[in-house]
Length: 249
Ligand SMILES: NC(=O)c1ccc[n+]([C@@H]2O[C@H](COP(=O)([O-])OP(=O)(O)OC[C@H]3O[C@@H](n4cnc5c(N)ncnc54)[C@H](O)[C@@H]3O)[C@@H](O)[C@H]2O)c1
Image (cartoon, rainbow, N blue to C red):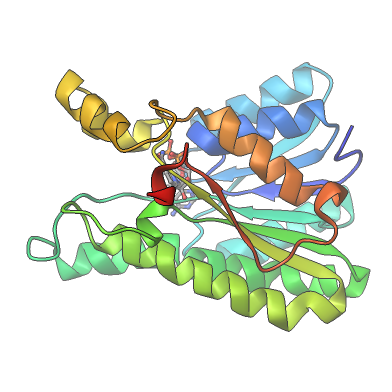
């Protein structure tokens, strides 16, 4: 029970890696705020966890909206009294090259992947500072570390998230708050389904991975569990790669 009674907010929790985290954290006895723009899937997940004896509820949150964050923090504290962990997990993906990218789509991606984590950090920090403890985990990507013939906006947003992680860790360590990033490689979720929908695309993705296969959402969730729990009490400002060795080459 590595998260016994810890209050954990997960954004983008309705599917993929976020859902895997919520299911894992429930087995570790966390109290979970399941947040997403997808109300149907998010509510169902929170319901499933509650029916199985866990503690969870759903909040509709668009991470790019400051007012959504204000309400989410109010509702979370009202319901669970405190906030121990925030996972800035919500993200959107685009494969357009820099030359093909549309500036409005660039802005939208940055407002979800980067501004969303900034707003989330800002929203929970007062509560965590008053508790003199907290753990914030930002979900980056190996596209932050290595370039690709595909995309541009996505990798740039995830690289900026690593910088945000370092700055936030420095500015909050004296308040007992740790801020870290996980850096997944390709993980089998809806996000990359178009890249791996045909055998050639899948083979290309797998060929770049030392362990020879894509990762699963729960393999990332275990890394986030470590950073969320007191097992990582001496860890802040770091980047934990969960990429099957992709970025080692
Ligand atoms: N799948 C991969 O290969 C991979 C690799 C590296 C990093 N990541 C990162 O992991 C995180 C989770 O990705 P995933 O693979 O589970 O993707 P996913 O598409 O399966 O899930 C993303 C979730 O975020 C939600 N979301 C989208 N926009 C939102 C917004 N504005 N506010 C709140 N929620 C929003 C979606 O509804 C969805 O439930 C993302 O940050 C992603 O960039 C994924």
